[in-house]
Length: 245
Image (cartoon, rainbow, N blue to C red; front, side, top):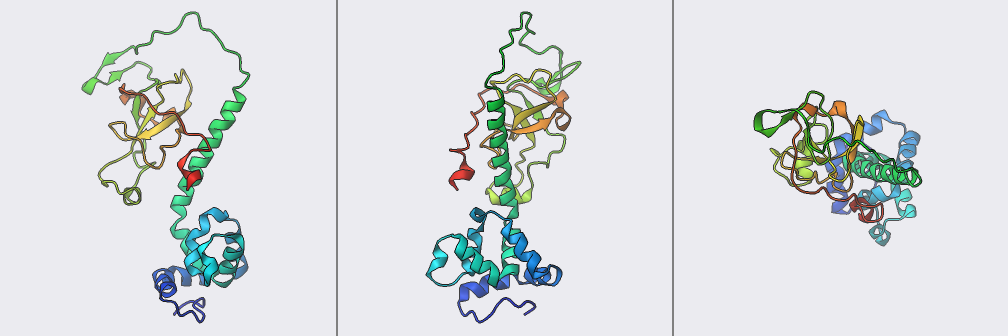
């Protein structure tokens, strides 16, 4: 055994987990001083640490509490780091959704008392330009339009093979498109919130609580196309899936 955290544990579940993460745990023990390992663990929010409970002992390990987690971290700091590292992609996804929801809340507060500007000579609703292949409208100066779908310039920005396994989805399916909300005309904005979707408009399962901000440079505007159907309303901070979990 390459690391020193096995102690005198006899429970099989603990040792099965230990063997699973042993190579990474040994590497962490060699490269990170124990005080730094504990400091890093302390910076991770408690709500993400249920994955550490199998390292605990006694009846208290059934409930996630600061006292229980502190005891586990003190005894097995490097195993804790290895377990949290294994799940960090999901933590980042959860925090990203949280940040997006909070950004929307901030925007709503800032817009509370904004004056309503009436435009007398409104631009015609339909796009101007010539129709290209597959019904795609090629505009002289393309811009974002409400309800339209656009390819992402980087198709892998929001999707990879690990996501397919996480959400039990065919790995050939790619969420490499962005759809503008149907109830918000972006106008000439170069940064706007969009829903991450596949080529048929189905929502990315990890970004279905609220849209994410993107720059127009992140999209292939010249290949945008209209899409039927309404986009959903963003979930509030109180009913989004990450909070319930």
